[in-house]
Image (tube, rainbow, N blue to C red; front, side, top):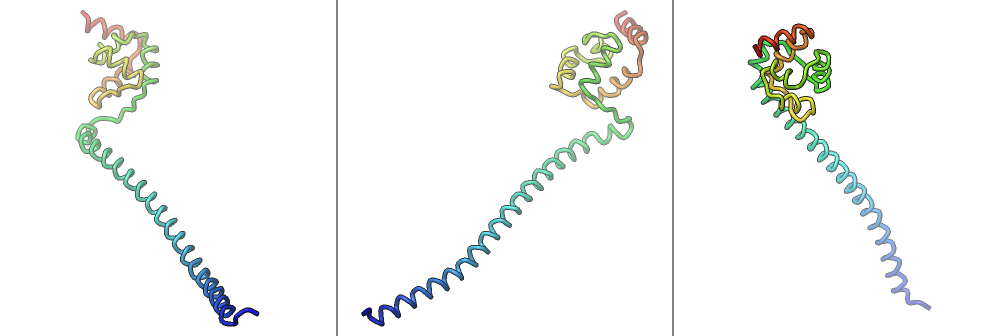
Length: 145
């Protein structure tokens, strides 16, 4: 026959473990929820910091370019558009460079997408868009001659 003291001791230990498990289970759930919330907040913070950095960069660019853009018309630029423009006018890259007042290497890099024209060069590109083949040839001959 087992000793009543040892049976009572075992039963008390079992009930205590059961109660402790219930208490710790609630704490584990709360802890997991807090960790999840913290991870979500960290992701949002990282996204917001990226956005602030991006806006800071564009803000500096806009602050530098704003005085020049207030007078000028906004001109969009695309590498494919420049290639199509040269083809339409029948110009080589060096000829287009002469008309725009830049080097032929600049034209090649703009068309490859490695560089973009400066804001001061965009009006010249826009004026080139409004030309026809004859006008471009006449302008080239005037520059060369």
